[in-house]
Length: 555
Image 1 (cartoon, rainbow, N blue to C red):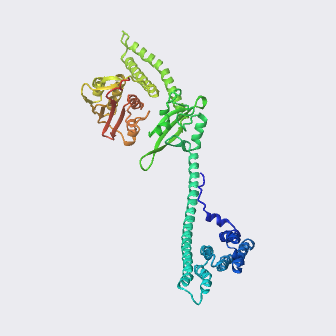
Image 2 (tube, rainbow, N blue to C red):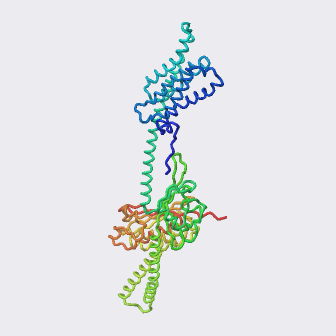
Image 3 (cartoon, one colour):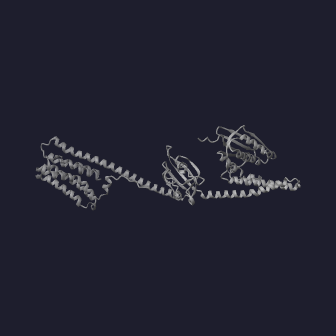
């Protein structure tokens, strides 16, 4: 951060000079004026060359100027250089009275010593007295020269001119006092600014240390995309991947979508979205190529000024390459294992079916055991299918205009026998037709799963009801039961894979905790949502929201 440049006026430069140079500068204006008059005297006023008083004034003025150079004022105490302006009154008196009546205006030269004394910091009383008495004694000889016939004009001149110089002295004194006050205020503000600058630098160092200590990349950008703040982690991302988004549209930005091969368009890159005012989280992109390619989970929040204007954004990058690769490896493992299990299970089920269908009847005990084998093999095959579906990141849906009322009717027909065995009553209040933009096979799977769960988690009987409502944009299907319900903690985790509530495990209700996870995946692939409302002992209600209409046609 650059240090601010403060104004340095002539006063500050003057104070940097030594005492001898300061005295010379104070005496210089009067000396130059007297030198100019002395040079012009032989030509303009030759008679003055015969005036001892005039010549004495010129010589005394020159001696005083030489004294300013020669006397070591810095070694003498108590500001003895103030003797120079006092002796200036004497020199001016000799010049004025020696040149009268040719040059009576030379008395005006007293303004120079008056200014010097008034601005020197001398005691106010002393400077005011000298500012009056000096001009008074300079003007007094001309009045006495007219004695005893002194006129009122002479007396007025003798008194009025010193009073004028006294007024000048007072004005300079007041101006000096005001100037000193302003200088003190400026010095105080200067000190405060320096303290604020030092504190700002400390805060900046602290912020840099904190940002560099985090394991995520952080970048703050302005409206034009230039980086305001970035930490070392974010800079390392840019250097390692070549994905520098500092100025959109410039440079080769290797930012890919989730397939790791398709370059994202400029307006879909994290910083571009943030600059447009979007707020997002968990936006996964791939940066870089080859072995340096990294998976980045990005989040952004806009920066808004007090008047509501968008001034920039903060973007956070988290390296999730290891997590993504581990998830992919886990999904591959589950997919491979599921595939390997399916073949022997299908073989077992097929052979059991063939044995049970033999024309010669089997002993009842053998038949019962084969039915146990068949039932458990089918259950295991269903579990393998659920595992494969939950591990799949490419669960395909093919939505079209579908009547959900017919799907509800089919689901109730399939579950009716099980509901009767479990002493559960099933009812539906669904308008027909009920059109939605959905994949009938997948939504049928969703309804089967929700209804079977409602029956399964109502072990002591009860009622399961299916209801629906629709508007121009969305269709909502609800499956409500009066079963055992869930606690608030269990409800928050009900859509997690392999999660099963403690109450269900204690009641020995079979299941692997995959059905609701798969259901949520199917619904979200349709662009819809699923929610759960439940309470312990009061049952549960699952609500599925699906789009009523498909996407607009492309032109």
